[in-house]
Length: 361
Image (cartoon, rainbow, N blue to C red):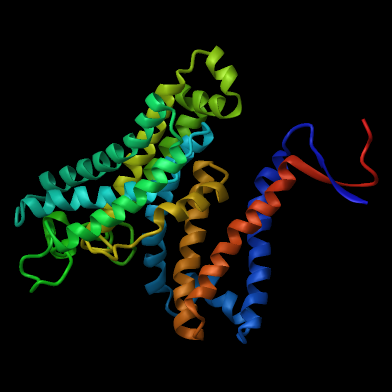
């Protein structure tokens, strides 16, 4: 009889191999899905994973992959601090939206101010501060009232979505937009735009910040006392208490850090690829970043690779929709398969298959 037996300790090999196996299983299951829809599965997988990087129109798709990966990596790195400590910020999407509102609000408040070296840094500070303050709501409620940060942070996402819609038709609406919803386009406002640092690469300030965040997070996790405290709190809260780790302070710092980084992602998005505050502001980066964080094993380098992979499925999925007439729901299903495959394979990190009867104790 085939059964699962708990390992004496988690397997390091499976810990790093599970994401790779999950990707392979997702591709296999995805090919089955595309075949059921009447599409050539080989062509579909090639369109999603190969064409955006090496295909005929790769010069157009590659920058888009970078732009898509930047907010995912930035948010996921911030989330990894809390997740490693057992602090669950599920509301990064709301913090991302509030960061976009605050950053764009600074630029629009002083329009048409032209000194970029003053305005853009102020927008960055405002975006980070907006995300930080939004994250402080579940953090302080957890510390002082012992509320569940999962529920509070998640509910605040819906509040943020209502706010951005209200601002897009109210305070931040373009006065020259003939009554249409949406703010001025920051891409057309030189002092506030977040365009490519090197034309045609997709590498803007958000992408540079994401790479910087990966490096800093890696150093903190491997070389800094704070990273040790985070890992200790996640692995053994009781031992962390004996070691002098202040649990309440850790909650505030981890949630604040993840909120600030999500707010930065929102600012870089609204000043760059998106361009304006709108009710349909690009969303779900905060939720997708959770998948990226776990696919990358809460390791900064892994998160960078996972973010690029997830961005590739988005851009490749759009190409497949256009070229193969695949429904968008099929692409979303394919992306969702990645999470389910990861969760399924991840069981083998702590358990192993055994043949025979279970021992009676």
